Length: 491
Image (cartoon, rainbow, N blue to C red):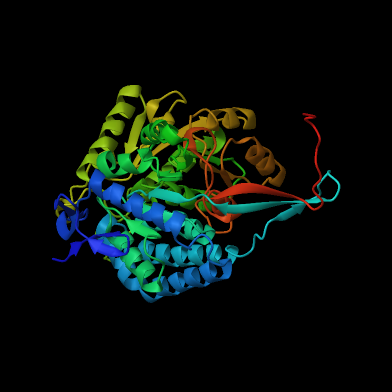
């Protein structure tokens, strides 16, 4: 079995420790790869390479149109390798192959989008109030950027970081989740083939406690981009304070999906299922908190329960599978703990709440689609991110009440409003403290629109022009065209 290596300063290498990690398919726990396991020493080597490439190399000063061309080449090679990348993604995560193929198309568009932006910001001339002078504002690359991506969308989330960082002229060190490295390794091979200069692109494999810690503490790093949980985000903020690094975080959500009585009933039911059970609920923007107007609540719940109980779990490579397993035994145990908490809090379990009994699924980390009703706003299962196939349902009676409830968590990533009343939809959307609000839809995102959250859902934005700006510093350049002595000091 070929070992997955790290890529540092233009070379594929094993870790200093020579330790390895088994990578398993969460569908059946089969070992699908062996990855070298890096540590602090490997992270330091990668950071030093990126620092030297930025300070002494010419990548930052490479004409923007050349960076644009290289990123377009990356996009083309992703499409050429789409089937292989999708296969690796499904092996790594257990998600359906259909989902993985769609991810690769989205990743291609991310690289194309940021390639197109690379040469579009030539700076801004501003009017100087000082006679015989000129003034302009330009954006320059931040420098050395460490990028820590999660296990649920390994390559998609990585692409949101890689593409804008390289478009802006930065050097990067990537660290995928230690349990899902396969597609990031393949992406690094593509970046190498396209020909980025030595030290511009680096990949370190290993655990957050070792590799990740060095990547956020090291004073040669200028920016840390992280997607993951709030507690880890807090630790990174503290570590990054050592040299006042820039930080860009996406830290998850407890996303409200609000259904008014006048909504298109069948569509809202169908989308509510997709909102929470897509990728087994392992989505930062999952609509795991459903708020239904009282007059349609019971009918809506009945329809959801009937359909949720029929969701087909299975192998991601089986065309009939609608949802795959959870990522690991540890993560399933976390979901199970939350289900027990929900019962203890007094919520009513109406479907799911256990592992499937199907013998075919026993070797995987499966958990049945689960629904709780009679949920109250202060319950932990309502307030905290479960990150699994668990839906909580609450009743509401007024627009004012539902907005207050929806805004009551520490999160503020995304949410949806379902109604045929356009004015009501706009009112509610404007009052929700969320980074993204969908009206009569759920989950769409695209490269052109910024992604990120309010409150503790994160800092900064990915995607859109704002995603590129995260990887730049603003510089003001003033020029006096006829300098003269000031004569301030008379001595």
